[in-house]
Image 1 (cartoon, helix red, strand yellow):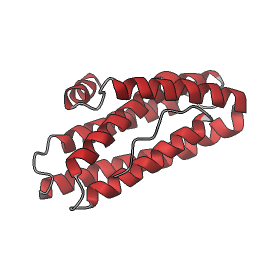
Image 2 (cartoon, rainbow, N blue to C red):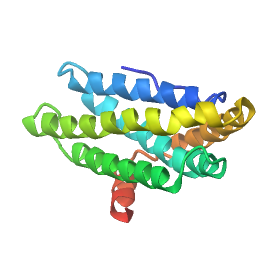
Image 3 (cartoon, helix red, strand yellow):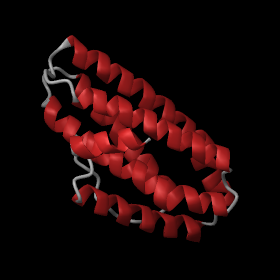
Image 4 (tube, one colour):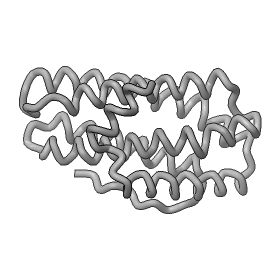
Length: 169
């Protein structure tokens, strides 16, 4: 099972990419019927929620302010976070991790997440690389990592919190 990545600062693009690779590994683990799917899902929920919330509060507004991304890109990414959260909640609500229902909901989450990672890497992270200084990317990385760690410590992946986020969107 992939370990939750430690909250270290650095270039925000690299930190976000590391989380993206971690998400892909967690999804592979969830597809494996012999893995501890409940434990992997709990970790995935925690990191996914912390990652998205930290991006929305610490990264997107600053990239917008620096004109690296525009309001439409922020809105689109936030909408995709909402879709991912809804798919995550549906998967978390399946009681039998060995069921066909679990596989179907996992597929829906995997599709939503893969689509978002692809778009974010092309439309948000590339402009961050080219239009934002290394110093600013480091400041954003520190702020992102700190917020992500705070959210993980708060238990943000708890099903009640995920449900609250989905209902609020």
